[in-house]
Length: 305
Length: 236
Image (cartoon, rainbow over all chains, first blue to last red; front, side, top):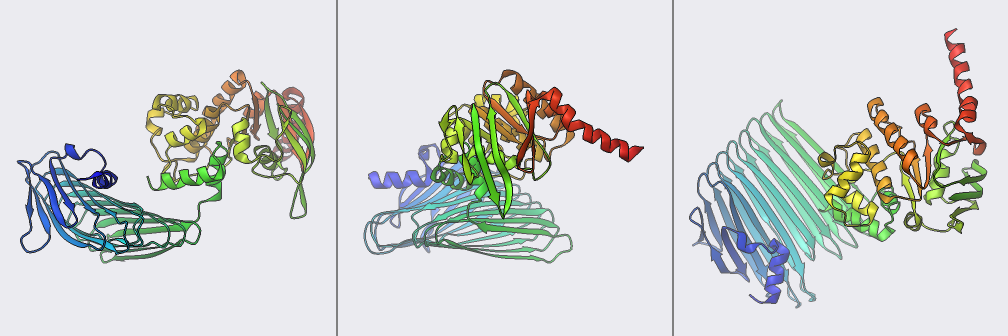
């Protein structure tokens, strides 16, 4: 790994890579570093690009890092990663992709991640997307996340795209059995002429299942964002979908909510609020001594924290 | 010390403030009172720079600050607690206190400020300043952000508005302590007798004019008889 690789990795998963129990680093379409543990196994797929990650039953606490970096202009990398989480296990998974593109050809990473959570397992999944480079070639990231949850399991997913991604289509699907909880926090900042679309399809199939999806978006300059949620309540369940957007300059945000209750005991809520930064918020921070620019930055930083 | 000279403010052909002249001295606790729509909040906002007067000047310790921005006035030592505290998604109480002090304060420092306004600090310091906080909690956090700045002029716009009686009693104690210890100017907009009672001086504003300004003994007699009279008419 060179200096660019190390900096990209740091952007995606921070500096604590070595602390992980299991690691798979993928660079320009190839696995370049792997570490496994007695209770977390990583196996390359034979039929297509990608890996299968197996977490055994009753793993009390495990950390898995599977970052992807792309530094080759013009590369399209499609990868399929499947996570099998054993019964009663509790793991933190950090993934994401950093693209450095200094040339004129587009670079693209499509990560298709599927999570199979066994009974009473618990997953914290953090995914960060980042793009950089001086070239005119686009940095394109299209993550698909599918989550299949068995009884009593829970998953908390934090998804962050802060900078430099020209185009993204993010698709998140969930199927929830009884007494499961899926919490998703998505934060996206777009600038220049970036386009970001995020779609959620969640089916609440079991009694006692619940989901809370929070999407916070900041669309600046000439960028465009679209948020679509499609939540189906098939049982005695609860869903709360919250979409908040801040607009600056010519930024646009479109929110398309769809909630479909198919059971009399389903309780589904959707909230959406899009607009520029509230004047009172700026006034309050300015009354604490921040100038208008500092106040605006502080509000956006907090919003995306 | 803050001085307002010939302040006029008109909106929609209505005179909100009509040639206000006022001197507020250090180490004094002032209570600005008067009927709804008399111009109290506008006067406070003009001192903070949130509103700009059509004419007249504002002096802070002899320096003309009429053309200064809100942030410049804040950095010169004016603090302002909003009548309706603002909510923020993602910004925590700790963040707000760090902005207020302009320092990378420790959690212990933040807790000290929160304790001053009667909040159990550890419970609140990491909470977001959003809808999950009650009106009373927000009010106290708002006051803490002003106290944390240690301003030379501290303005509180109706601190008791929208809070329950129990929270009010706590707030009253906060202001009593402020009155006893604070070295700068304190200006509280209030209708509450208990807060009026703390004041060194009361300023009565009606229809954009200062009708009377004086010590609380004289002023309470001016303000309260009318209320007593109303009670008589009502119950006899």
